[in-house]
Image (cartoon, rainbow, N blue to C red; front, side, top):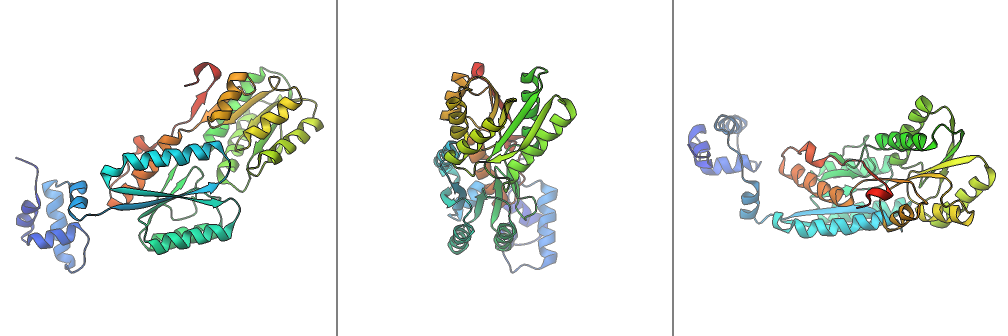
Length: 342
């Protein structure tokens, strides 16, 4: 027997083809008992709808927005490029993707961006922003309009977002701690941590994971208070420089967020370019060069291309009402050394 068709469903449920079409497309005008009868027939027959064909017949196109911070971060520039590549690849799936950049720390600009998204009738939004009550409420407003929402890189677990696309940041922090502790080789000393902002959930989660492993397994190392670079390389260079000048027994630094160029500048200016253990995040042009020169020991990476493609697939699945393939969308933690640079 071939695959069941809408004709089979209509015959099994005892309704017209037009009624089957209305039920499959969630359109109004069908009594609840009739809807239940059609859905029972779909289940009994094992009917699987060809969504691509249905969307083509309806001339439907998906409109997605990626809302990203407007910073000088090389990783975010790579993510922007990866979204554009994903857009080209998804043309056959009838997906149009726009990238919008919003100034970091500017809530007025963020709200204006959400106003534009609501007014444009967008189908799905992938947002990377710090978790705030205002952002939570705006995500809730999108959900009342049946807009698919995914949190990107840093999660929004207290919102109504549909999915999170990014690495497990607590696990990433734990990984950084294990690497730092192993590289220390039993030596005693202080470890500094630099982030972009402790207002960002991914930074907080990485710090939590790092502290847990350090407290459990490496009592010989003292982890000092967090330094914030605020996505500003000059500020990062200044705060790291002050930290190094004030602590003579530092043996390592964990760069949990942006600001790698400021960190390496502070190290090199003090002749510490290859003297400290340095664990960083995200493989970029600069971190690659720092790995090759020995300034950085290891980079914990998340693949920007996978993140962009995964976010688009999840948004489309949410719009279509189908399940996400969990194994396909899991963003894995990559450990990159000079010896295994891709």
